[in-house]
Figure 1 (cartoon, rainbow, N blue to C red):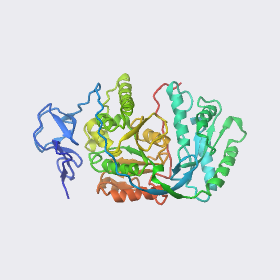
Figure 2 (cartoon, helix red, strand yellow):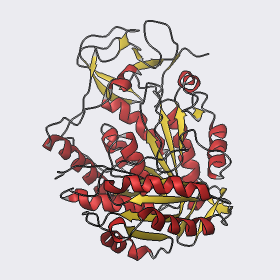
Figure 3 (cartoon, rainbow, N blue to C red):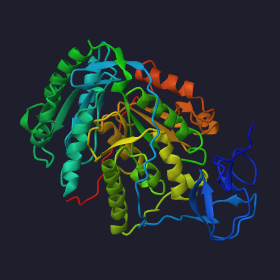
Length: 467
């Protein structure tokens, strides 16, 4: 078994693979003497500067390495695009008359405001007693917002919830309002009107006598229809992957993220799409993504997103490199550049075809970039709202969270996969592309249920004032 790895011939640090020594597994060591102030290079790219002299073989981490990020970096468009060889692939999904196929036959109950969370959870509990046929589940997607949010937050919560209602996995959707909130059903209906959906119903609790009986009557009608749906062979062009990593470690950029990148390439080559988000975790690697933009117009939109996200940080008094997390550092990641260079490998080698705003639906085949933060649940919710039927989630530290759509948890190392087998669906340490692809197809076909799939959670990206 290899005890160390050198990723790129330009690197002056390697990665230790073995446990039990002076240098923890997943952490870096110097391949040669590095002088104070010199660049430290990993993945063939700069990940920071040495803060003191480092001897060959010495551990390289927070005690002798710091970020080299420039908050005012200048960008250029140097187009470097790899063309993927077309492939043919299919999966068994639920065909929809209004868009992409679903990989689950589910019913969503969506509160317009946190005040009716209890009603929605009660409706979920009662409706589950009547599940029949092919229905995979009934889920209340509760949250604490929808009223008293000022500025863009009010519009964004509406866009997010409407995006979730449009997700192909939802055969039917019930919106439950209170009646006096800012995020009114009238606004949601207006937003959804252009989509011409006939699988969505609405009611306000203040407008009916018994809200549980009223809502349950609607849900029984949904259940009767949805239970008769069946899976059919679907072309992979209808698939949209969500790409996300959380709790990264020193192995994430070597195993899990590159492996997911290969799966992303296979889906894109088959005519499908993938969505990459976590904008703050692109800082330090953003130029690599900019060079993959299909056109200069897309490059300009992507650059604007990066610049605006950085400005949001600095306007609020935070440096753009307020990252990595304590867990990242314990796992061997020292600087944001290092984390980002590993993170973006999930997008594979395909070109970037679109830049999506928060809550916007993905429209094109290929890789899209979505404007959302790095927080696991917020980013995963944004991916579901953009239309992703499934999320491939890589992790070096592990997490039990669940998202609004099936989320395959992919460990970067075997130790985590063995320790947290109730959380983790797959270990990427073997870099077995065929095995991961087989698991993903089984998940799409409904033959495999993710470890976190029994419950569903959503979270909102709030940036402004709440009354």
